[in-house]
Length: 260
Image 1 (cartoon, helix red, strand yellow):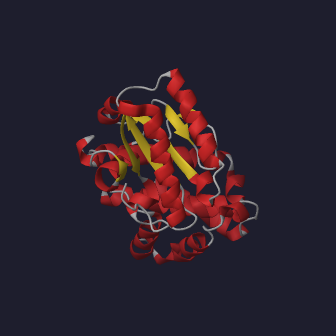
Image 2 (image 1 turned 135 degrees about the horizontal axis):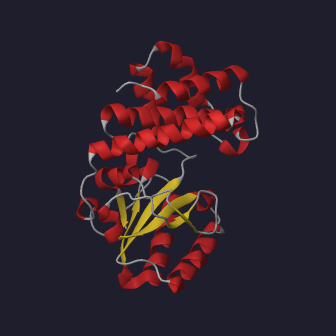
């Protein structure tokens, strides 16, 4: 495995991750890849470690049990990165056929047990894997699937935006958390970037793009939200500024109805 990140303790964790998965899946394993912030280049010490593991076929029950054991073991390793692995296991055939909303064997950030979720079965993950995925083990990523159609990427983004808007309008108290308020603004900058540019950007790149391209009236909210993003374990327990909460509701609605 090449040196995939600038963090030595994370590289040790990833090497152990690869070793454990190879020992468990054997020839069933095709490849293990970094996606998300580490692939897009916008990572920092607070980033999730997003991965996608590609297998030849679907996972048998015994393999699922073994993977649960592996992730429980990795979670307990003495590095803060160990609690921030996040990703899914997907068969090569399902990866090639495109995002269909079906559930994959998924590990959430800060979790030690895998569950079934459609979280990673998305066009945005496939786009990132194809264009920027980092191989921890396996062939180069553009041999695993075709490039994601830009219209499919846009349609998925619009569906996600509508879902966010519905959730936040139904539960406006969500943005009363400083972490969620900042997360909502930054994430909507990323989704708006995708709608306009037909590509996926890292969080800092999307924030810079939004500051350059959106009306300057949003600049203060975006800058404060980016400043408040680090240390989610602390900010999730703190209240958001009431004015920022109000503006965030307006920003979410603005992005959802943005005319592209």
